[in-house]
Length: 115
Length: 116
Image 1 (cartoon, rainbow over the protein chains, first blue to last red):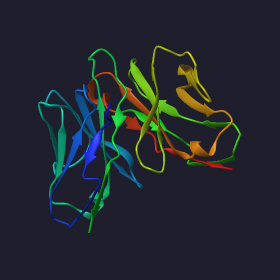
Image 2 (tube, chains in turn red, brown; image 1 turned 120 degrees about the vertical axis):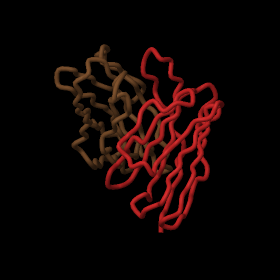
Image 3 (tube, chains in turn green, brown; image 1 turned 60 degrees about the vertical axis):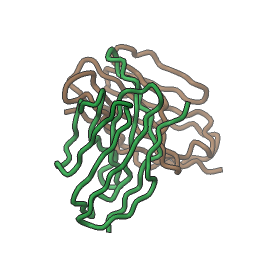
Image 4 (cartoon, rainbow over the protein chains, first blue to last red; image 1 turned 60 degrees about the horizontal axis):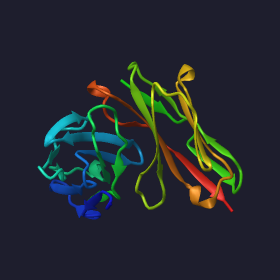
């Protein structure tokens, strides 16, 4: 089975621009979560989607948004980029049985640099 | 709110030494799951183990073993006979089943360096 894929792997943007990151989950996985990883704050949860609906959201400003498509693929968008948005953005997928908490499998991440 | 504390930030050992990575968690939920992930230099987080709050049995998988103690809210990870390939950042994480805490909360991570 192919793993979680994320595109692009690297991105350089300028302050004020917007960016869209893409994630394709493992085949059969229905839940997708997004995380931001920075040296200062560590790994922080952004949001989780299941069946095209946002199940949970972390403490990030409204500039961060996401969505999930009917094929479980997901995108996240960051508008009006700030220097502090420079980070590794990780996507994770899980089966989501609805009965217990499944482990999440992570993609390689998108390294976003804002200049 | 839930919290995961990994008090050790960096550990350096010589190959073949045993090493224990500590994890202490806080939650008010009665049903929750604990995880360990490994992040090698390539950056991709690799799932190692999941344990639910009702299963306090220790687990061993090859050179890896985990000790879950609900009484002390700890979920420690031991690598026996460490190898250079074990060098990575290790994260402990917590997730409840429902509500606002039904999201993965990670500790800050422990950087393990195994020297030949």
